[in-house]
Length: 350
Image 1 (cartoon, rainbow, N blue to C red):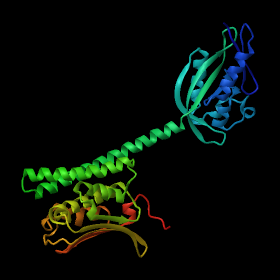
Image 2: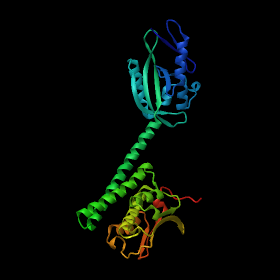
Image 3: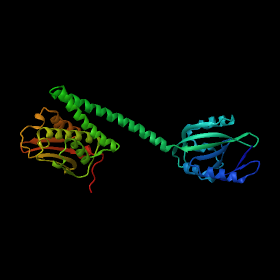
Image 4: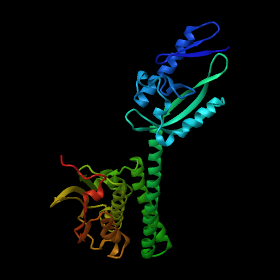
């Protein structure tokens, strides 16, 4: 069957076959007009002859504004040579397979598109023009850009995780009494880090709720009835999740060895709030164990790994300070860190 395609007005494409069936033509016109892709036809001189609704949305021109103008109106100066190549291939009867490029909107802005071009033939089989389908790939480009950024961020965070793990291994090895002791401690600390990591993954690495973090870090030690957790809602930044998570784990481990959790008596209170000093807001996190009845220092003195985490590693990572005090009745750890170092964005006043 030899079909003849003619153009009238905007998108009134009519196909007249041997039986002259306008129903087929109207269906084709409806498909073209309702397409999400811009469908444009032009003659061999590049003059636009049809323009569907999607083309109007993409490029900002109404049909009456653009039909009769050269297709080069839509092509940036830096890409004008593409039209020469396209027309040469169309004249040779070739289909120009989908390729990605840029086009210009009416307002002068650029739009990334994927374009496919096919020859149009008359009833005698002669090539008289070209049909162009343009697909807006702005969203796809944005997704690719986000994926690249995500991969760079993942790579950065993985390197940070390696650094933290290597530090844990190094400091634990210095203080372990034997291989079995080293293995036990390193397993617990890596598990703690993994728990914080799981919290971040669940939140798509956007941060983590401080209450959920503390709960997850203390859950392995049991004795939930002896632990009170309270504070204002705060979403910690990823690095704060990891470092505060390590500190809470070390406090829990020490309590299980020498304090409330080990004796199954007394009380642990973990609380936090936001305090303002001069023009700066700070996160104040406080751990308190009361009714200890023991006199051992935390983590067997100032040389333990827990002491390093609580007094140096965590406060330094958050740009803050920490204080660790204790006697046989109470043991307290307080962290004071600028809120902008702890959360994704500065806290806003209610």
